[in-house]
Length: 293
Image 1: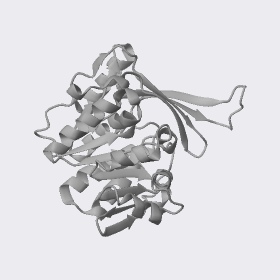
Image 2: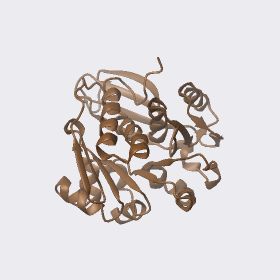
Image 3: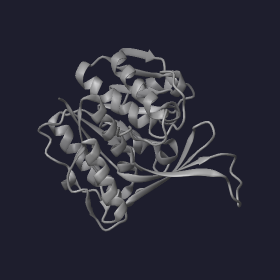
Image 4: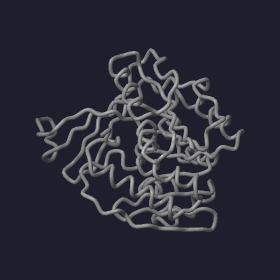
């Protein structure tokens, strides 16, 4: 059984499903729920649903929320070491979900900012690494995570990078993000992120520009499916039809489907199909994690 190491973040998601447009400066009817979250943690839990082992590198605070999040990882069978070693509180992400299922996020990285290179576990049984962009975008954890990337690269283990949202990427220059992409074996991003990072007005041009930095470019297209290019091979697959309830975690579940299948087969179409299939299951429920039952 293959194993994917997920580096980045573990947090609490506070999701507000809006029943109407926001009444700024006043009350807005909503349904609020809390869920375990964090980009890298979400990916790790979905990976356990693909007959693949997952291990998480992140941090939580020494607080009730942190204990609950670690307990939840154990229920999924996600491996982890020393998650609770920070003086900062556990990270929280506030998520607004509109009537169409589209989400807007307000992240607070919390304890994840204190990642150190010593958090990297032994890599002997690791087949691939997923890296959350939040870990690099936070200047407090950036140097440690870049040192982790250097250690992973020295072993020849492939690293798959999700640079996160366009809004999050804009806290640093595009050139700096591209310098990180240049270190990776693959990048996974959505259409908006691809257009921004690829400095283009159409997806094909963005894909072509991003190919200059990494051999594998995977672009998620939402209801239009997904596309990818690896060296000179280009593939596109349709989305899986489903009832969209909440798009939170859609990209995380896609990565969890794509990466194990790609490591196993090196088949772009099979990997893209595995990603869209898992993403369809994710968006059909509220929250970013797979059901435990």
